[in-house]
Length: 211
Image (cartoon, rainbow, N blue to C red; front, side):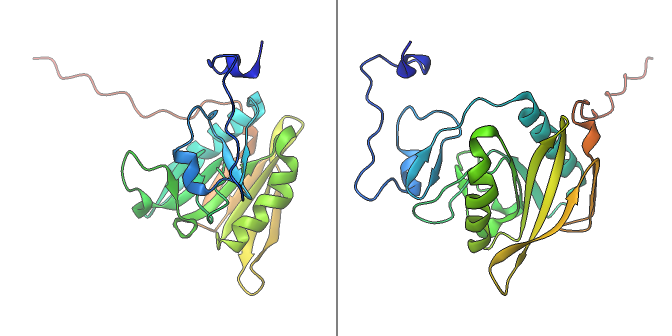
């Protein structure tokens, strides 16, 4: 079976051919039939491989934990792209953003100055990008906080970085096993061993009083 057919396309479908100088950030909103979560790095399209269960459950854990503890001035997005510049539009796995960055349901990307925290969960095919390429680009774009999440024994290990504005580079401030407890970008505590647990649900609605 051809790759085109796997995406529901005809066998004679031709994949997009990059123009001279590569693709631009705006092209991601115009190119047809791109696989979900396609990123743009240095003008090249990056196609994402299927998620592992570890990756999926780590995203779920972090998204719910951050959303439940973030102050009203912040919001949390998952797998949403950031237009760093004309040739770079990556898609962090989890983001903490300013609440006023939401421009409506048809929004497709964020400005880097709207991003408070970018989180990347490392996969086998993303090690080079998540460990070396993206942190440099996020720092140069001025995103103040960055987390890199690795797998160890089935549990997430979180490497926490903060931007040093004097060098425009990230400094490692801690490596967190089992529990992540921080005061920035806001006070939060995350039980990293709860990766396989279900997020707490809201209380069920009360039954109406009977007459």
